[in-house]
Image (cartoon, rainbow, N blue to C red; front, side):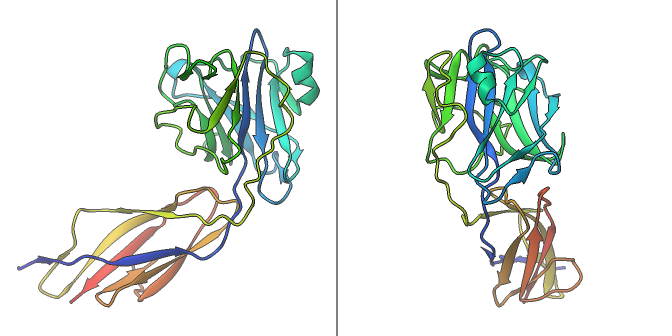
Length: 273
């Protein structure tokens, strides 16, 4: 049987505009129990943290198994939600929306914000899961130990890859130990309607066409940013290719819907001679 290679030329476009989800806007790792996390809502609507099953997770000392805290309450659009250690300074507690007396993070512990429970979609992260950096990520004022970190106002969404290398200087500004004056508000203006991109992963390395003149490759598809709701992605093929969202019915173009938690639906592309 003879075979030859043909490329599948597919074009992807996000049809719906989306709002950015919740993300960490301030991190306090101060003296004693002065520890807090501020979460900013830029979605365009109030968020019920209980109904959405939002959680914060601490991965202590390089562990890959987290301690999970369920968040409760509602955070208004454009407002922040502060999760603090219950024995923190009175200034922190005055801004706190929820407290917990269990062991909080130190500078060498990774932190994750999820929607959908302990195994839900990651909305944001600080540090790197599975890695113990020693004492901290970063250095000087812009480090995760004995400092306050505030998200740069240019940041519009969280760091959804909690396993990649973490450099706080990329998205955070650093302040001295026990700096609390910015807690409880965030001045960013990320807006809404920011379009998401898509990432495509091919299931094998090449498209080989058999004597019958066709073959089928499979792909996964995912958004590069996390949406607050369903997002439609249109896939269009060239003259030599047909695409399918179900692996059975093939067309010159299809539309798939991505939602939270983010699925990675299988996309099939069939090359024709």
